[in-house]
Image 1 (cartoon, rainbow, N blue to C red):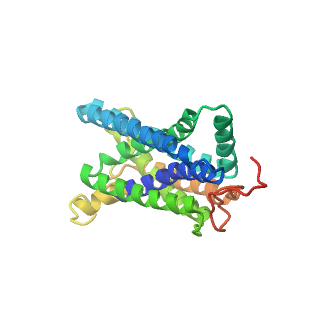
Image 2 (cartoon, one colour):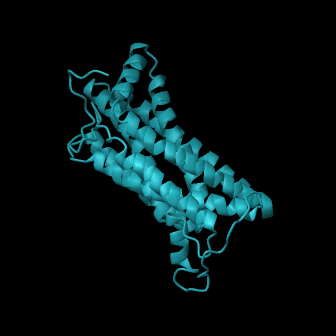
Image 3 (spheres, rainbow, N blue to C red):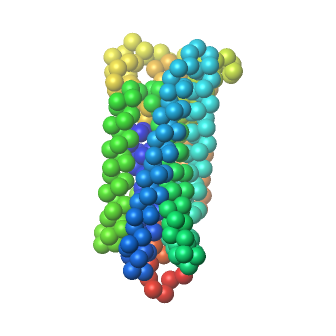
Length: 291
């Protein structure tokens, strides 16, 4: 549940930022009547993501044996790759996100194609939605569907609230700190998924095991089995009986990803629109700003 919460909170806020920036700019231009096109694009993006995620979940759920292990391992490794790309992509794109979106809104309005407003929001929301569906697929196998759903919808609800506050432009939200903290949490989640992917590929016979288990606490009622163990599996990638390869993959990923994310360069500020420099976040651009 914890991993699902942070994943949907992070991805949901990125989608909410896109919607908030577009709507705030339309409000500044006095084009609030176009809000319906923004909502249409957002709803369509969510719908496509839900259908795609549900379809893949049902298809994977019908697999058994080695095919299931291979599929879960591949999904976990793919989720790690996309998660890693996502946190660094957002760090790079934060500076120009507002300006780029407002430029596309101007082009859409100038061309008289208000449907373009829907496509701007749809593309942004569906991208985040499909990524979220992939991440949730990777964590749901280590926890119940119910707990994953609770965590996911809780994170999404909080992301929507934050997005609304950003749209209103009157709340001080330190997005730089938010993305730094959630980025660190996502790195931990991704490390756990990497360890899970290694485990599944070992179970499927694709990877050999040098030494396993390093320890075995499967009989422990707290960290060996039960709900708390499932939480640790989904959030930290915990295993009651890990192989040396799982531990190595987890540790190496944590060290390398943390180094590049926290210490190898500074997190940029958002110039125009939502800012991540620790100051108040305002979705409304200044009159003199430019893309």
